[in-house]
Image 1: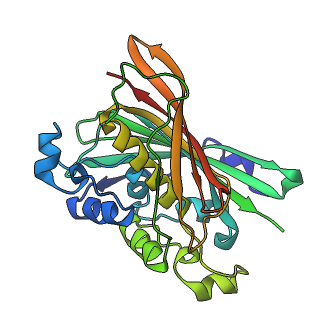
Image 2: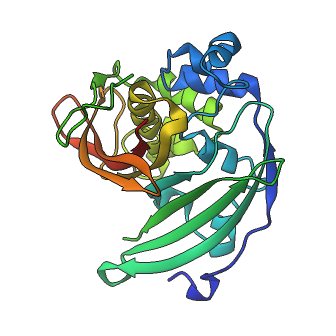
Length: 147
Length: 137
C-alpha cells in the first residue's frame, strides 16, 4: 500500500522552456494539420504572438522535470503496473513558443479501491509563465494495478 | 470554426477518424511528447512485463481529441478539458473522435458550452470519455 502520509507532499518545482521545434514535432505526432500550430505566419494571422502550445502539450512539458520519475520513486511505484487513469486541464491563459513555464506539483490525494487491488494517486500541478501569470492547472490520476 | 450564436444542446462536433495507429505513430509520439515509457515502444520490454504487445499512450488519444476541440473553436476559448482513460488503445486501431454539446450556461457574463467527448475504435469500443468547457463569443 502507498503511504498516505504523502498526501499534500510537494515535489521540487522546476521550469521548462517551450521550444518551437518541439511544438512542430508534436503537431506531426498527433496528426495536427492546422497551420496555426506549425507555421508562425499562420499563427500571427490568427492573432497569436507565436506558435501556440496545444491543449495537451502542458502535460509533456510537465515531464521535462529534471527527474520525471520523482513521484514514482518517492512512492516506490512499479512502472509496469502503472496506468494513466485520468487527466484534466484548466486553462487560464494561452502559452506560446519561447515561454518559460514553472511547474509546482503536489500530491493531492492517495486512495484505493477493490480492497487495495487498485491504488490511485492524484497529482495537481500549477503552471505559471515567465511573467508570473497563472496559465493553467493540471490534474492527473495515476492508477497502480496489483495482482 | 463553428457559428456559436445558433448553438443548442445535442449539436455534434464534426467527428473524424485517424489512420490506424502504427508503431511509427507511437515512436513519433514517444519522441515528441517526451513520454519515454518503454511500454509504448519496446515490444521486448512489454512482453517481459506480461503484455502481448506495446500499446498506445493515452495522451496520444487525448491529443487527437484536442484536435476535435481546436478545429471547432479557437484554442483561446478553451477553458477546461479532461478525459478518463477507459480502455487501452491498441496498435492497428483507427480512432474516431466525436463530441456533442451537453449544456449551455454562463459564468461571470461569459457564455459557455459544456461538451461531452469520446474516442472509439473501429468496432465502436469506447477508449476515452471526456468533457470540455469552451467560451462562446
